[in-house]
Amino acid sequence: MKRIEIRKKLEVLLPEKRFEHTLGVEYTAAALAMVHGIDVKKAAFAGLLHDCAKYMSGEEMYKEAKKYGLPISEAEKDNKELLHAKLGMTFAKSKYGVEEEDILNAIRYHTTGRPEMTELEKVLYIADYIEPNRKPLPRMEETRKEAFADLDHTMVLILEETMEYIKRKGKTMDEITLETYEYYKKNGGKL
Image (tube, rainbow, N blue to C red; front, side, top):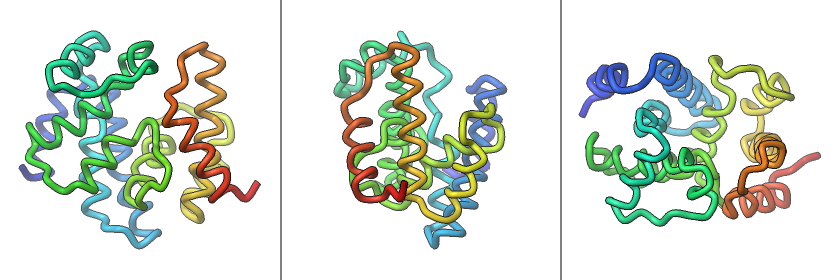
């Protein structure tokens, strides 16, 4: 399916603010890819599809994940909205015809990250956080500047903010997020 067709489909499916966010991530992922020498079309495509399952409620996502036989972590049971990444990967493949593993993995890991992410995965993870429609978050200006200079260090900045947010909200931390933070703190942190 072509990007323009997917964009039209998502505009109908997603709430207006979510669709605006999606377009912001598509644009930001492409911009980051240009700067870092990554396939721009793949980055934009991953950005467009990253939240393709976000039209459902958390409970609906949980039922769909079970239907597809997707593994569900304790953190995902506690916060069912996290399942949109795994479902997004599944829908990108089954509903939108995406076959490229690198795009599917970028969608899969755009919320939790993972140790040893590919450059495309990092670009999508970062674009999701810094895109222009995001409400201002602590250190956003610094994070946006760093994203165009050093992807690994940007991962550390975003993961620190994410973990602080999860603790403040009293949510269950997904183990892979902690593993990702420890990996990038050790291998990409310049702090």
